[in-house]
Each structure stands twice: as structure tokens, then as C-alpha cells.
Image 1 (tube, helix red, strand yellow):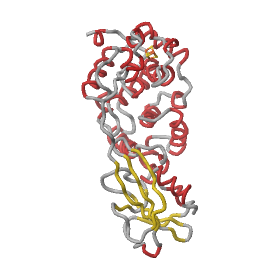
Image 2 (cartoon, rainbow, N blue to C red; image 1 turned 90 degrees about the vertical axis):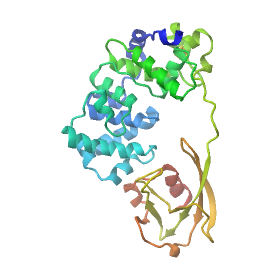
Image 3 (cartoon, rainbow, N blue to C red; image 1 turned 135 degrees about the horizontal axis):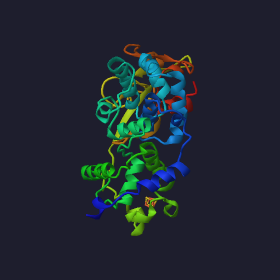
Image 4 (cartoon, helix red, strand yellow; image 1 turned 180 degrees about the vertical axis):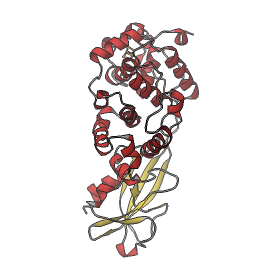
Length: 334
Ligand code: SF4
């Protein structure tokens, strides 16, 4: 099959990356594993421009893996607040503690050992390894998947098991001999800067001569979309209690989203006599959330459990999910 036997233009990509790629990102100043690990975790499903201020904040607050391991969970969640996909922050904290306890503060530098740490999958392990050691290692983030889907004209539907397996085979078979750092960065840069989803700049692309989708004039047909179902919608009520310019929030524990962050008390049914002020819409990868704001009388609040009254200045020290933060700062006028 042409897809499997086709060869990626690794040398052209490396040359292009060195000349035109992104080489001044804050985490590229150093090849220190802590710094590169932090950046790679933040970059999972998140754009570079969003990550930069968070990366700088974390390096200021927690300059070493030991500082991060010693921090309180609320400090880490507060610093991460707004970056989304909060399991990354919990895993980050857990991973720092393991690196201190098990590896004496030094990140292990093999793919298998890295992949045993919380929050590090195969792609992140490859990205860290190539960034730190300069050895070529396979990696596949969303941008790289798009580049490979097009370059190799992958006809499997995006996101299916067969798609993932085929892409990993291609990623492993098409590594350069050396220059792993420029190669991995080049793949990410090409996806972000040239081979964009809707408007790829193929005439400026360093690998266009051999790109099967481009040669066949089928660029926008790749990646092949999965025929998906509509996401289900979940409706909940957020009970909003306000007293003396403070809002009542509870720490989310157990299973479910936003574990470790602070949010409004929640119920599946409308609290009796509550006035529903408005509905907040938020989309997760697997479902859509409609949170209805139920304005409650403060004296009805039974002050038990892990909760408390927070003023605007108190809110700086706790982690808040983005929609909760928006409600507090844009709707409640504390
Ligand atoms: S030629 Fe176009 S479609 Fe192919 S990899 Fe380059 S930018 Fe992407």
C-alpha cells in the first residue's frame, strides 16, 4: 500500500524548522527535563499562545520539580486555573512527587520509564525525550496527526483505533537519523504554521513535493472525518448563595470533572423556590453541559462539608473552572 511504503521528507523538514520554525519559545531556552516536561504537559490539546503565560507563571511559582512537589494541591490548581483539562494539573503534581520520591528529583529519560509517570502518554514521552536529549523519538499530537494524514493520504477515519495504529507505525518508521529536537519541533510547527485545518499554505510547505494529498489535490479531504454521533447534553443546577459580598463554593471531590477545583453546590433537579437566573453552556470532549444558575437565599445554606464563603480576593488562592470563574466575575458582581 502506498501510504505505508511512502517516505516522509525528514531532512527537508529539519532544515525548514531551523530556518523558519519556532525557536524562541520560553521553554526552548533550556533542555532541562523539568522545564520541557512542564511545557509538554501544558501543550497537550492547548495552543502555544495560551500556554506561554501559564508556563512563565509556573516557572516563577515552582522553579524546580521539588518546589512543585512540595506545593499544596490548591496552590497548583489555582495556578492552573483557566488552562482547562484539569486532570493534567493533578497528574502534574502527582508526577512531581514521584520524581522526587522515586528518582531523586531527576526525570528518567527512557520512553518506557517516562510513560509510567502520571499524565505522560506515548506522544508526550516522545516529545520530552527528543526535546531533552535531541534523539529522534516518535510523537503524535493533533497537529502532527493532520500533517501525517495528509502527507501519507491516510484513509482511515480520524480518531479510530485503526487510524491511531497506522499513524504510530508511520511515526515510528519515518524518524530521522539524528536532530530529534528540530524534527519533532518541525512537525509541530508545520502543523500549526503551514498545514492548518482549513487553510493550508501548501505552496510554502517544505514537504509538498511528496505530499500525497497535495499531489492529488485532495488536501481538505484529510484527515478523514469520523461519522460521529451528537454529543449528549447534561443539565444541572448550580446553587448560588451570596452573603456579605462572598459566594459559597465547595471543593469537587470523587469522580467526575473538575476534581480538586471549587464550584457551586450542584443538583440534578431544580431546587424548590429557586429563581433560575440564566443558563451557562460549556462543552467537554464527551458531552455538553448546561448549568442553570439557581439563585438561593443565603440563610438556606447549611454550612457543612468542604465548602466556604469566598470574597473576590480569597478566590485568587483556589482553583476555579473557567465557567465558574466567568459566572462569578461576569454575572454576580460581588
Ligand atoms: S503540502 Fe499541504 S497538505 Fe501536504 S503537508 Fe504540506 S501543507 Fe500539509
